[in-house]
Image (cartoon, rainbow, N blue to C red; front, side):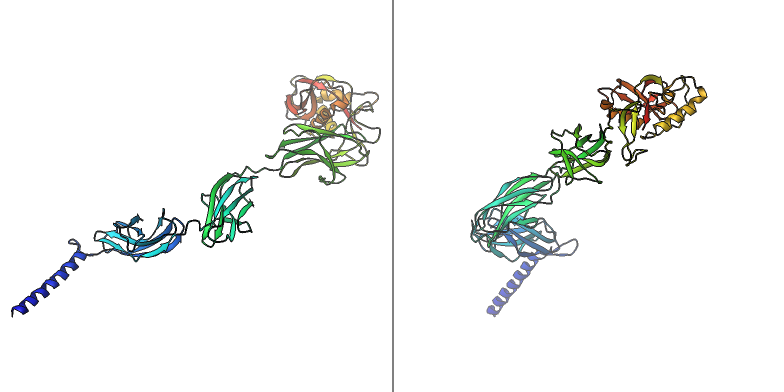
Length: 506
């Protein structure tokens, strides 16, 4: 009887102990009646491993009805590491997947790792995994060489494989991008060779004024090794020069003075400039090329006296300029040489030949020489017929070939104030020089052309000269002649006194 009572007592004690342990693991929230347990966590597979690092993840699938306050990875060189025995690497809190980068590992060593999760009920662990870091020297040793020959869109860079590591190098090259530490997942350019040695590669298709990060790489059987990082910035991309072909001057039967201007070098020095010409439109450097012998200065005109032309012939001419980007051409002009014996500055029909009509001028005839003769006399007169007699005459054309038409309009309209007064247009219209009449006040473009040829014409005094081109009832265009003048047209009050030099057509 006593033996039976003792056995019953032991059985009861064992049962009570089991119930107590169950309650210790699963507490009841007194306020909500929710059963609280440890969290459930799994260890994810290894995603990468190197000589001194590895990336491992985990996943908290159930928080056990209690908030997970910490989660992460524990690892050590022995089995089943814990947060107390081992190295702990936290990776946030709460439910869901996570990963951790284990760094500072020893090479060629086996490690054991597992995920953990902590809530108010304690710490739970996932299954452990093991991995071995790569052995020291198993990866190749590669260095990156500095970038050279950097332009707006390209650069030359390379590397050197000094040690293949634990196995032969099967691929080498460079990787680059606009962020630090590029890998083979970024832009990769393979050298095409393998093994030891140095190599260079050209990076093309880059963006101008941009910063790039480059590393050489080498791949063997143990993985991918990267060299040191090189940082460089591309240049502001250059462009073609901006070049203009100015009107030719001093045109004779066999020669002409060509004038060009480079207003912008495009960001790259102009290494050559001059003119191209030919018998048809749009000549290039494959046609006749006349190279300027001096240095091209941005913003300054350059000129070449062209000789050996054929008389009474038309040529198409363009200025050109070359920089590192290529060859740029200016606008096209046409020049027509004179008949033999008829040239600028020659005395002809009561004056001096001052301009030969060119293609595009009113009255131009490719089969016959026409132009402008400049009279010898110069007067200082007002544009108005009488002081303050302002009106609109309609003589507004600026074109070469329209000066005579302008002059007739001015005189006809201003006749309302009488015909006895002497003013610019009437002085020219009334002139009879050396038996020749039909003189007129030059239009503004005619006067500007005479400024360009003033050296051959001669007789121009320093000062302002009236044109026949009206702006409004109070103003007309004048052109300034002088050693420092550029010959540009400017607005002037009609009541001002300026010099007047008659011209006529032939």
